[in-house]
Image 1 (cartoon, rainbow, N blue to C red):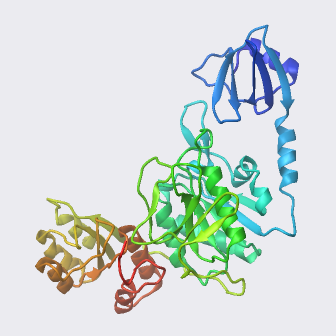
Image 2: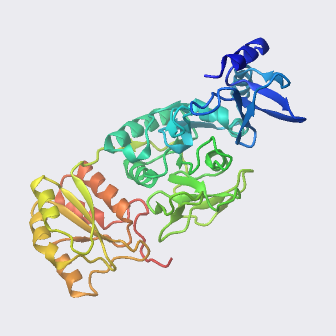
Length: 432
């Protein structure tokens, strides 16, 4: 709470937190949004968020010229009017899951927390109204590290609802840490998808001047409105600058950096396309499924819970696999070394696991593909019954195996489907 002196001054001017104000001090003028006072800060200093995204603290004094520019409610009305329906524009639904893209700074703790709905996102990015008729709502509010198969099922149901309402495409705002898992899950579960589903995230919160969320949202909307693309994909910054975004294939994308705005990269694959905020689209590939509103969506949203992703490492204890077998795990994805190898001390435990379960071998190298026929212990793994993951990313293999076990019953059928390219997760050849 601001000091009594500051509160009285704001009251006299009819100003409340969230209003746009102009403050003149020392022959300089500052225009921005009046923010809540930081608990650890000076109670006698006004906190103003400038248009460039930075906050400035100004010590209040009698000589300060403080003026109301516009009420928060007035700005909201203007934005609401701008989002009115236009028959010439496509309808795009925005479903908010949470994450940095829908986060703001908590002025009590100084931390970044998720607390804004999809409607808040639309208000923050009024450019969306120039592109399409935007309809947004919140599905969940959680950090992406907390996502689980139950959340996938919930999200898939909400996507079904939006498609039935007649939208031209869906944007899912999602935390970046596990966004590639969710993209892969949606790609497998949403069969005969009639319109595109584009996942969008942000590496920087909306309170930061370098926030990439609005740019990514605009590019995703431009791509949906201006192309015939009809698959699940991820739209994120292609470079550190605000140049353009890449549209990444759902099962071949991975977060490769903790904080850079261009953290996502396609692995063993090219991006589908690039898209600029002004609407320019350039496709790199033409083998995508085109949107077709006549297709009837069939959602297979079941995922087997008892599936594990295990990284091979020196001195790994085979009792880990014994535990998985005793706990009733039905699937195991091994993230092996090199061409797809694990230490020989795991072989007996794997043999026991495979009596009831299924196991897939992938590589920690990411680029390239598994080849179990080069070295003897690779061939031994194949003889045990472990399935070759080809060039699937470990995360894609994990999601795929969980989805197959959740929707198909025959062990032989599932083994066959693991090696089939169902959603672009496996390439015939790896050249990149």
